[in-house]
Length: 304
View 1 (cartoon, rainbow, N blue to C red):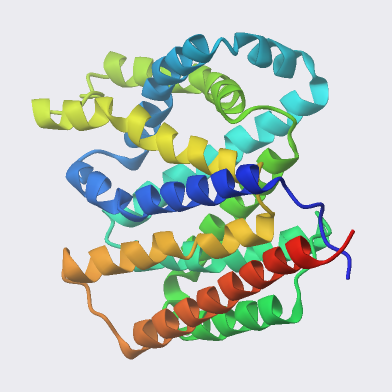
View 2 (view 1 turned 180 degrees about the vertical axis):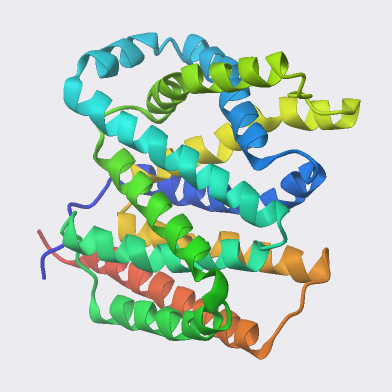
């Protein structure tokens, strides 16, 4: 059976750890955004972009990787890809913040439940990654489990679908782009910076409190760069180290945490559909991990 070329074990292990860390952080992100419900979604995204740049500059300087930024910026194909990914991630951020702060956490988390299935599909069709029978069974079980949630949220399904496909396409293009995670994100953020500065200038000229109305809101806005950049860097690092279909399956961690927070912290209702989805998804993950472990052992024990 044909498979995508295997990554070295240490690199793949890094990829799994990066992926788990990224999705774990994204899973608790609604708690942060709920502190900013009085701030318009567009303003939050503008601050996410603005305050990401200083952090990225520090990371690039500390690692001495500015040459990677210059090399990527001179490569027309890479720059075109990063222009598209910048638009995709900005749109994804804007819709996600809107969904969380308008009380549509369920619709947002459904988008990220659908996203792994889109990742598997893109990994198979675009990157020619192969899944064995057990992995396909796991994907099918996850799909069946998600179906009741989709039916329950038909009126807000457009939010879920846009979040799903914008982020799935973002991840795919970042995997294809031949640029380091930090350098690539720095270029994406720089491409969005002129629009960010224009938005802030317009608000300040109009007398709009662009930095919040309280010191607490200002602090949370200043943290937007750290909150946005850290999981995105981890995600990009994971995408470049492990198969995209596998990264997609790991993503079920983020919406599961979001559901737990929605129910346990904010008192949203846990329905039968949620119970079916959780059971099916975690069973699917167990099967998928079992298949990865089995394939890894087979690759070690089989002769060359």
